Length: 445
Length: 160
Image (tube, rainbow over all chains, first blue to last red; front, side, top):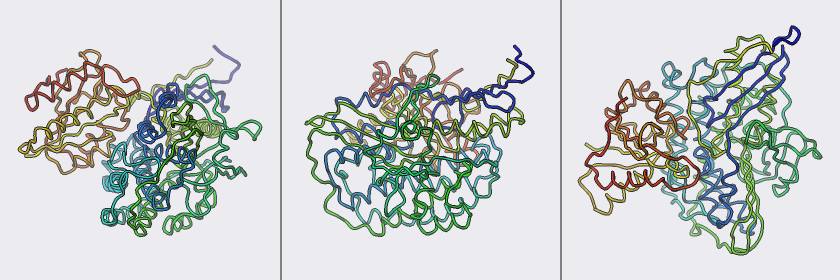
């Protein structure tokens, strides 16, 4: 079918490789104009929100940790802080520090996986990390060593390497000893040196020219780079307590995906927003530790990184920061006799947001006097970022519409991977199809 | 010579947890019967490539247990596959919730020279990956039988 003389090009990526999970992308171009962008995530209805109903609030850290194999700690942290907020439980500073240490472990693990295995091959022209490793074996080994350091933290503080079991509402089941923590220091220090070198390595990549205005949303703390506490802030003036999250943001259903899109409510300005490393950096860069902060300065990142392709550099800097933070916490740690504080159940509602590696993770629970949940809401970072990712493509593609279809398809995938979408968070069955980028369906409509 | 056995999967995705359940039940049996002469180390993994490589690095003999989707085979059947074979059956095993997982771990280890000398994959044919914990009865029973008869092999050698 022909409409005038303008060609319409449709790019279909039936399965997105190197994102955690399964997704698909449809882009429809008319000439240089983008007619439609649909990032499809195969997410079933909110299984876990329903699954949590009828369960005790005390079970939330163990249940929600199973939502995502990549970032179980993030789910545990948002869960316990939400329940503790609802029950008016205040954990002592050493418990908070240990939780932060655990979170550092997960940031290190998750970011290392993304930087070295999933994203770096894009910039170096390799189809995947296996091909990259043939020419850059040492770099991949550095990635392994860094991730292993993160694993060691999670295994010690979380109780085991996968699906950590040591976190509870009110604290921990068991505290690590100072001696056990000290044993991590050499490994973390070695990983820190590798992470600094790796940041310099990724900063030398050839980044596509692409800067755009972004609404960046992250936690803002008064004294630390955000992980588990603070207000929700943005570079566009938002500043609200976490308890007002649902008054400011809403999830909307879009017909082509069964994942929900989180957007700013219309009466609050409307539109997409982005969470994750770029947002944390823009809002809290002054709290980066010494070497991470020095890297940001020496690499001239500026106050806000507006090129999403440079997110890999910010992610690498966050690895450096997380390693420095982990070492700092271990150095200051003192054995405490209190692994957890008493928790008294009562009817109520609690909410919390923490910074998962990929961005803001919001939990809210309503529960009865026995602590039994009757309503749960979980908003993962990927559902918050999804609309912003589509916006990236809408703005990006007209500039590259003359590229051959294979290159354009790759560019789309790379642009999506900028934000490390964790489709696994959607807790669905995933189909791994590593080489399955479908042929473009190009034709004249 | 000691063997590292890795159970991998996600117990909240139905039969996807088969590998983990296998490993846990085998460990329970070893503990209950106070085995001391079996040189096994049993570990669990989420199945991500980095994690698998970290686990098996330095080991010479490794056994990985994972779930498998293969509609041509009965649920609960356990296949024994040489993980080092050149014609490794990628397709059936590539259906996994682990995203960047076993296959990539093998490929990457080969490139980096980190592969064990022996790598056996026990692939348990799954019936359902529905969300929620719990195995389907056929898979549950097959694991029980295999653990009960261990170390007597009860596996089907993989053939295309």
